[in-house]
Picture: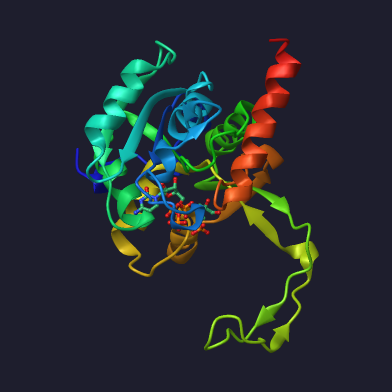
Length: 258
Ligand SMILES: Nc1ccn([C@@H]2O[C@H](COP(=O)(O)OP(=O)(O)OP(=O)(O)O)[C@@H](O)[C@H]2O)c(=O)n1
Ligand SMILES: C[C@](O)(CO)[C@H](O)COP(=O)(O)O
């Protein structure tokens, strides 16, 4: 089946959407430059387990997700396959590994290209958000099943935000241009959920460099909706985020009683 002929979940009757199969694409091919020198970010350990494995488990924890496609660092597909084989993962879930590209957009596209035809709902989830709770994953899937073409989990901002004229020399003072109304702003997380045909069309059509998949759908036209995100779905970007992630894992272990 060509991508153009893929059924659109957004146009489908509600009972079809409710039974649509869901796959997750996990882009994990980034270097993690902002985290500092070391292995590719997704392969670095959190409490002894690679970040990617935490992220895969987080998505596979949803009973609705029956396939996870991991987009590995370009020369790391064999290593990622071995990691998936070496860690306990739900048996009800299938796994595929494909090599990634130079940008997140390219990596997601390569993951989409590998999806078998029977999946009509697609989640895209950063390996760098390893601790997303399953309730957030399920809320995104439910909103797509309810008819949204694109769904993003997001949180209100904790800080006031300024728009500035970026400095030509990093570190120089930057003139403030505006202070947007914070009440209308949201900080966007993943997994982002999509009707597959809509996401495929967005990746085939939009050529601008964007930082998330929902922005591509926005450029195309279909409405993108926001559902509540979760504090623990934060992205591991800088070294302090590793400290926070390990603290969250330690708290979970205490709460679980082991
Ligand atoms: N060429 C790329 C770049 C990024 N990603 C993935 O996209 C997610 C979000 O990206 P980000 O946190 O910005 O990761 P990096 O690009 O690795 O970070 P940095 O910009 O600090 O290098 C990560 O799971 C990352 O592995 C990817 O699959 N392929
Ligand atoms: C999709 C995303 O998680 C949105 O917050 C994205 O990965 C952000 O990447 P960034 O380049 O670090 O903003």
